[in-house]
Length: 185
Image 1 (cartoon, rainbow, N blue to C red):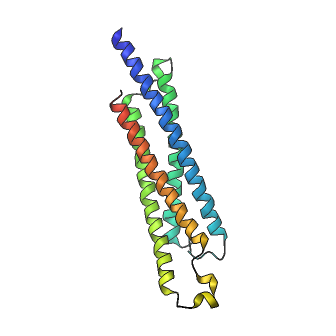
Image 2: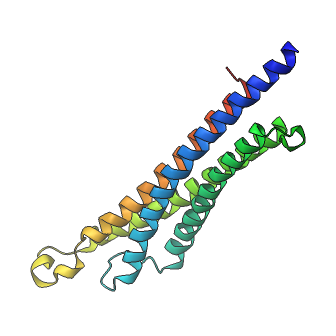
Image 3: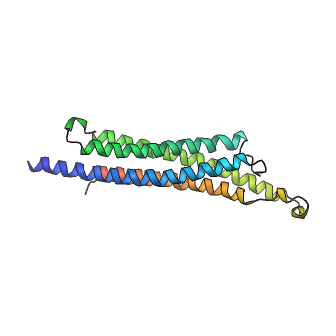
């Protein structure tokens, strides 16, 4: 009877940790990804935007990063549903430890892929801005101020940083949940 009670307590602790980690990851990543998407949509809609995000080399990693990290937001919600299954009174509904671990590993993998795509997009955007600053001749601000780097360019860099933070945060939460699964207190 003691072993059964201990198993129940461990399952409840893991379920609570999954619920907490999933909720934190969901909301933090949701806010960061939505803010990034809004900034990037403004940048794409502005005809005077300096960085050509429409270029295939910049657009594919940016859209891929937003897509992967967006899916990671959904996957964080999946952690909460796993938590509900673990709290169920019906033992047949309990997911196995292996299934939960695979789910966490998949979430971590999605975040890593999203992070790599974001870093590629970030590098191409920063390189485009660097080339622009190096090719602007002196005194151009007086004759053609539209060629200078403006605040929207910096906002796009901020959007990429939000995506990087979302990816790192998702990896950290998945790692923490995976660790708590294998070593419940």
